[in-house]
Amino acid sequence: MTIPRIYSPIVLKKGTPCELGPDNRKYLKQVLRLKQGDKITVFDGLGHEFAAIIKNYSAAGVCLDLGEKIKTTGKEIKVILAQAIPKAGKMDLIVKNAAELGADVIIPFTAARSVSRIAGEKAFLKVARWQKIARETARCCRSSQLTEVYPLMSFTAMIKDAKEHFLKMIFRSTP
Image (cartoon, rainbow, N blue to C red; front, side, top):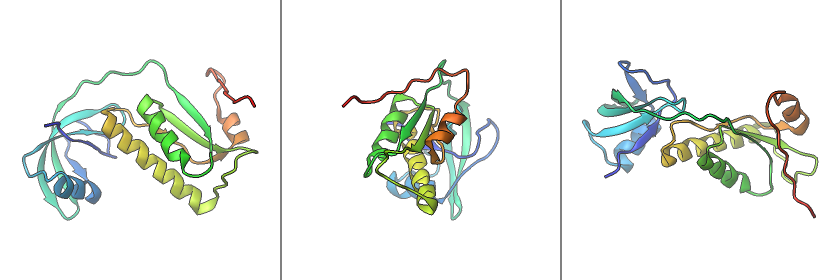
């Protein structure tokens, strides 16, 4: 049986208690049917990954005992994907695939020819959804690094935000 991997939004350190929220409680207890004393792997998306044992369940969440740190390999190259918002729900698949391939950052932006227009509260909710997709993808792909999804921005803001020392490549399709 494969040991389940769970994302912790709190930075993990050996010897500190680890509390997971109610959404993880439901997933561990009702979906995976794990009991007190069962083993899981917990990661924080910053390269820290630990073997853990379920200490107890409470209404607030799950309490874990962190065990040995699991060695992870770091990446030498940081990949940042700036992606114009496509029409329909294609961005969900783009975020999933980019996270599977190891992108460190995804920057969604609106362009002059973008068909899809997302603004205000809807943009915030979309970015939150994409961040959740990136977390779930890291859990499934057994990656200790979490792909970060930036807030939606304009093309000019995205270009201004780009660092000078990075190699920038822009791909476009030809008609």
